[in-house]
Length: 297
Image (cartoon, rainbow, N blue to C red; front, side, top):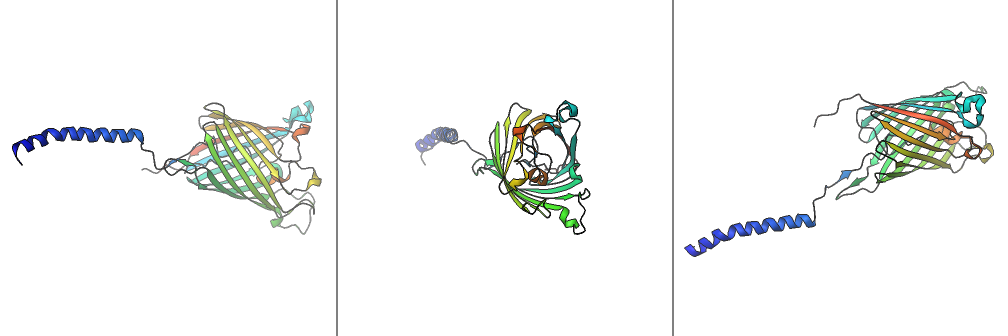
């Protein structure tokens, strides 16, 4: 290499480097880098809509102590203090086993019923280069009536006290302000009220959340039972509530026509009618505790 060529190379290299840098910056502006996948959280403020399970899961090691309290019918009038003299309650403990697995147990005063469930998230909504358009959660559970039989029968066995349910939750957080989910549900009871009642019931549920502010939202859930006994005067359960987040608590006030607070009861024993004013005021309180330390990364 002669002297002229060497000098030309020395002077051209910085210019080429600057040009390459400018080209790289321009390409990044045209197509900014996106994360491969970013999971979507906080579809709801808690793991329940009102009566129903929500798309939201408990974090690993979190124990959620839940108090569900429901008063009597408002249209009972002043003699019953518009239902406040009458009440039923359910106490429950839900636990986050992993990011995608939650289990729970509870005890309700109505029929002194025990219940339990397992909740598994198969898909989680995500954005990015590999988006997932919706979340998919599977729920299965069982209920056991422990109250004495109203009409004792020597043929009644322990198995007659048991019911089972299976549910699919499919939903999407459309924005920070709106989440909607559908909830096809199957319920089986080993013992039914009359011969016309079906042991197996199918229900189509829908639930959702509309955000009002950083700490409040309006929640709704509703079920249409497809094959119930029309002669018993049963109605589809509808609940409307307001969630308020206060630190580690989620407090929810709601009105509903559903009597019970687990799937067996509100799908099969909702005799109240919104049209007749048979609504009940209630509240749910959720308090989460981190009982297992988070794993260090």
